[in-house]
Image (cartoon, rainbow, N blue to C red; front, side, top):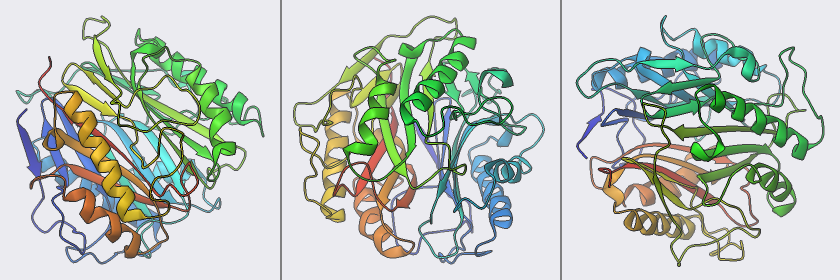
Length: 409
């Protein structure tokens, strides 16, 4: 499919050379990689100032969209990483972001608190997707009511249905009065948030099995003890073959009583019909240590979704333990294998999302960003990379998922 790439003149840059671009437009989708408050030489601006960086990041976001002949009103969802040790109320942060959006912009949202970002003093990184018709017309859209999910500040909404795409805001186990439900029980909290996701999907006439991608962000560390119970509780709601999936541990959520949040992407025909999809699980790929219904790759119409790719074996054990470069290559090889089985290749990728084990500083980023970038021709896809203290499995140090587009079968 034809793609248009964007790198606004004078825009910020990494301090190393990569093939990625800030934005990609393909069909009705516009993908914007993680925007940050850097100079064209890769120096951090407004160090440690969350409000100032949020404002600058969204201004950068608007410039990328403008370069792709659309604007902030076309946004359908945002994924916001921000540094928070628990001292900042997440609603306050989302209000900072929301204040940068124009009237008429009502996206879904997910805010993920992290202990640090890639560069010293960097405290905000935001990626997102927009939609506009190929002829330039705005996409019609509908929104899920506020009462179906956990509380969100305006202008954010519980879910957006635009064209064939449904994006839900990540759901917390929090009721309408702001009280955390099932404190201390990640299994019951998982059931709660999945039920909220189901309510949002149901508003648009969708069900769990219309989901094409699921993302879980759970409070925990490395190892099956934190991963397994919540993963199984979530998976029980999906039939096999299920959606692509990514699960990432973070040290804590903004509210320490919250143990998990979950958001999904689903697809329905514009007439409300269920769309056929193709699932793949290449023989050479890894597996979790417990059976889950998810598949490594899924194609629905022209959209391709991959679950987070890692360097594990079929028993859920790390291959090349703690070796960031080797694991990055292995994850990228898996990505190529999945894309090929879906009739696509690396250059059909529109967006890359990476979490990797690393501290605040360029060393860990520079050990994986050039490697994953090298698998794409220039101009390459939009990208986001976020360091974390640990990932889901012991000695696993990187997880990469991608969105791609290819003409429908």
